[in-house]
Length: 237
Image (cartoon, rainbow, N blue to C red; front, side, top):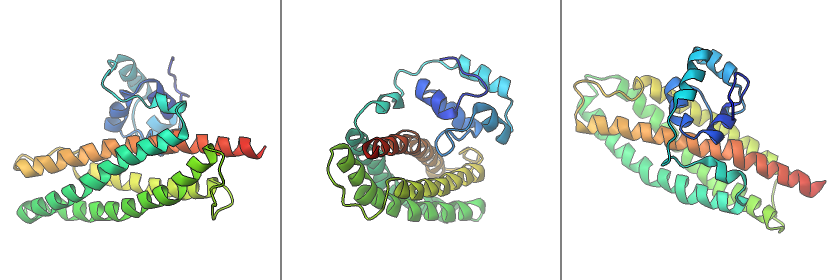
């Protein structure tokens, strides 16, 4: 696939998974705003389009990268199970660990690094948003999508699958904004010179959390949700 200024970010990632990390370093939002053209994304992130295209073309293939392309054709049942077993499980394990580590780093380094207080507040809000968000997906949206694909009545309390999807995507926007603030507060997750091993581990963990959550949201916003809406429309036609 040849990329140009009008290629959507989500399409680039689907074709070239290694672009995910590249986009993250440039501040290009391929998950919540994946349908945005490369040109518009570069404009909003104050990045030179020609330089970004050149960088894309120079990226080496990453065989170890988990390509999201397979989920374009896999069953929606399998995709929702994957989201729960992989990304939801990761968050349930990692968020408590990161919260404990952040408390430790704040207590030791808070006086010299006042930005840690704001980092702690943003992270706490992130956790408060993500935990009920995942429950709503697991208890409402995902079961309905699976029932719909399997031809069973989902017994939904909403008129169309677009209703819960719109709610989930608004919440994704809020999560994306918090991740962007964490990246800004941590200067791109660059630990300070006086940072101890725990400080460095905290920033490394926040970076990994950002990367996993971006992929998580991409799979939902750009693949699961459009496919679920299309399947419902076909069934009602």
